[in-house]
Image (tube, one colour):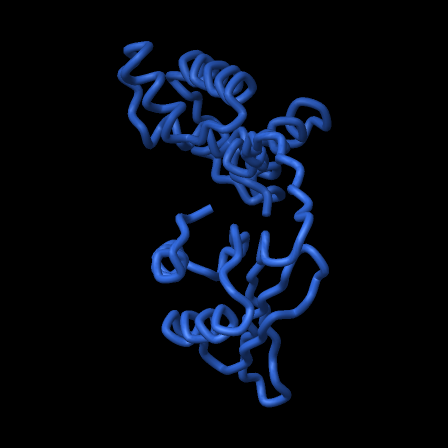
Length: 205
């Protein structure tokens, strides 16, 4: 869709370059003669606002309209109305910019310690999948990191913390307690992880 300002420019071009009459050019491009003859009183100030917006969005690529307007109003002290600034912001199509994604700075991961005997380190993790009818089921797995032996697996549609603790107790009865437990899965909440490790007798790690 062509904006009225663009249709006005095309009508002006037809009058100046092709020698068309103003009334005919206005009818051709769907612009009223009032719009054609209108001269903005603050065009110079609008250019100043546009220049500020272009500079701010170029230097601060993650700033949206709100931060740009607050900077002009509170830092620079300009009293421009927010509707006017936003109208120019949209005319410059700055609202269509793709903001850069934030990248999280991650620390260098520590190499995993290799256990030298059984029952030194256990790993526990959740998995999930869907049945044919759409229902989701979950699996809770426990492995010995030394020989990758599967110590236990619980499968159900729901695995509350009490069920996980009971599974741990059953493994400890015949296998004994490990020296450390590795738990690295976002599906296990901090509360359940703390409750589980406190019940077994280890701190969170």
